[in-house]
Length: 467
Image 1 (cartoon, rainbow, N blue to C red):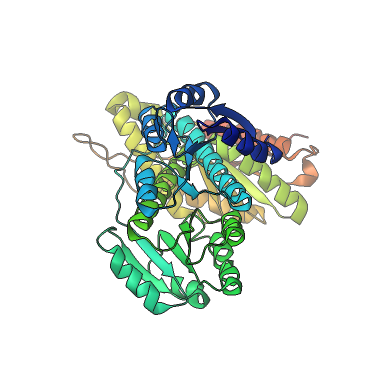
Image 2 (cartoon, rainbow, N blue to C red):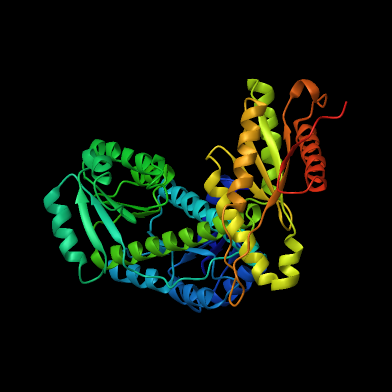
């Protein structure tokens, strides 16, 4: 099934007719006859969408919206209200109460199903992002919540500059946003010149072919990496159910079928901006979680979880392209003494400073990770042994180049490192699995590291593959 929908209507025949239409489109349908019953059914069945008649036996659709918004369990559920009269005032009141959209009766099946698909698509996307954010929060990786601000940028896309300018002026008392305008033919060029809008209002002309042609702007905005998360609202100056449904299926977030109304448009744009801001925050949380999963929190370098798959990928590349690379394990000499003598805060300062020096002496093509307490893994493309040894000596010199400042009152200390190195030679590594080759190189470098420690430290030792 495509989704679960709760129909709320006091008239049984209305519920039956709507259920037949939705069931034919493969939706699961549950029913309620009043506000009280609907709230109970919503908590029990957790529908993806509620479609509600304007007037119910124990209240109005607006009452149901407000009650659902007060309940944390039902708050995320979308509400689509069905309006009998089609007047702007009641439509605005329903949007203020929390309805996602209001469709006039008699219902056009094409538009109804198009709007249902659009709302469910948005609901599913929100639920997926919410799941990821909840997971990040459970792991302590979430961004701090930032207050929502209504200030944003909106662009009117309209073939008539005069209409767009006039409507932008009428929006000023209702919307605290910067409104710009452009023509459909110059939309993408205009976006390259200034700040990107948060929301777009595509004002369709009354002529059907021209309106149909303008829908291409939606596809262009969704295909552009810089605008794919922007809110897109389509405003029809002349109602056309087929074009409206097409706009929603192409990726428009919202649709106004009854022409321009500044109060209604402002409510819809605020909702789109709020959804965009929430999406941005959730994506930031996911990015933070991904970064935390592969980065060492102290030094900012990659961690072992990232380094091992990277090492395997380098082996794949070497096998496929006939290239070579070097694996180095750098271990700080006598690091335990620093912790014991000056404390762990001083040890952390040394690790951070060493990480900074490693970044400075390595190339962009090199990978450096902290894989243990004072142990660092470096993977560098190295066509020859001489180049690999030069890179390893450069790392040694960078770490010991100057004293490292410790937290007061301690004096600066000089630190050195021992390095064990292995050069990838696929002819001498019989393992076919690239994960095994990476592990073998790591073991080879680790063995060489112990040899460097045994020979006095602060030096590079090359490991040899087992015979």
